[in-house]
Length: 295
View 1 (cartoon, rainbow, N blue to C red):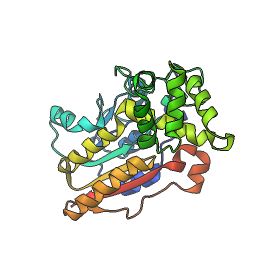
View 2 (cartoon, rainbow, N blue to C red; view 1 turned 90 degrees about the horizontal axis):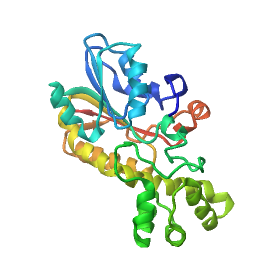
View 3 (tube, rainbow, N blue to C red; view 1 turned 90 degrees about the vertical axis):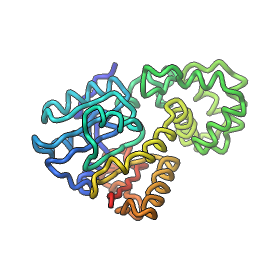
View 4 (cartoon, one colour; view 1 turned 120 degrees about the vertical axis):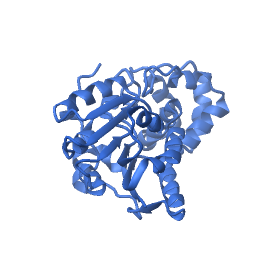
């Protein structure tokens, strides 16, 4: 277990989120990926006692930290262990029909990246290949890597990591199985790529297996089908994505809803972090923020 507090976690584009959300102090808001509570803290700090924040996450350790961080601000929040794609169920249980704003900050938290036992980072070579957001999930990355066919492995890396050397890497993985630790996978990738391209290749490969383990794109698609009817008129939706697969889904769904007259898109092009923020928080370099308002 890692001892992480809110002081070591830096949320991405907090000022932009606050500016676009235009928080109503008495409003109801959802942070669908509350993580360690970076964005949740900002939202909660701008709510009066009449406001309410619902935070969702599937990571037990993150939820513990988030609750602790938010409890020092106010008590008008509720944190639930549930995927953001299932937020309508939680709203129903709480007796809430519509909210004033929803935020999704997709991707990894500091806690997940820094935990040497989770296998999210290719730098933690002694870690097991786990990659589960929800530790109660039955299938981890090692299961997928060791039980998939060669063609399935190649497809995972190609479609979810956009990795051009997917066939070669899949062949090497298949040959050297079982693969149990991060180091095993890193060694194979190193054999398939030149030194100057290894880090980017490893990032794409690790991303691809993480996406499949956690069913990330399907969760996002399910959410995009549901969120509009749970927003009040004038309610905001803000989504921060970290790779093109996520951003493409958000972009296309926003456009479709805009054509249907349901949304007004406030970001014609995605917002990226400032150079100053990128210098202090490297995670923000790949972040893209899109925002829309319900008509």
